[in-house]
Length: 171
Image 1 (tube, rainbow, N blue to C red):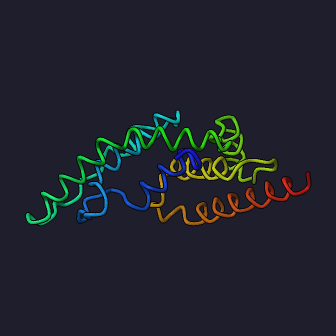
Image 2: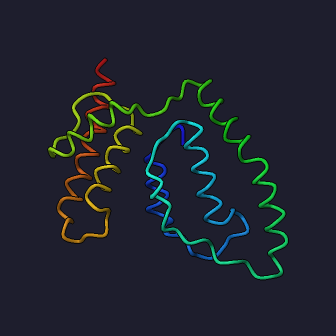
């Protein structure tokens, strides 16, 4: 979360939403995972619309013979997750890993809205967060009528990454 900011939330929602799949013994239920992600986002100061996870369905229950094992591991995760979030956030900060800057994300988004790549240096999380915001403003990937617009956005994101990398190397 610290490394990729809100783009992590949007990718998680895109790849795993809206939940409702079978419960894995190796992970908490989908709704519990969403809760931990929201807790981590709050810890690092990542703002996002609460509607992001509002339409999710929980994982389907495990077979009865596995439910007791899952309840034990769920309780262990529930008791340790808040501390783990704090520890990893502190570790990232101690290593100089920062959170994406909101002003940069807004500047990049304005470029994408004008169909222009961002032509200054930015972090990968800032570029990706702006791309996800633009995609969500367009209604997400569900609108086939916007296929050309999606392709343009993909190219803008990639070109923005290339420009930023080039400018960082030129310094």
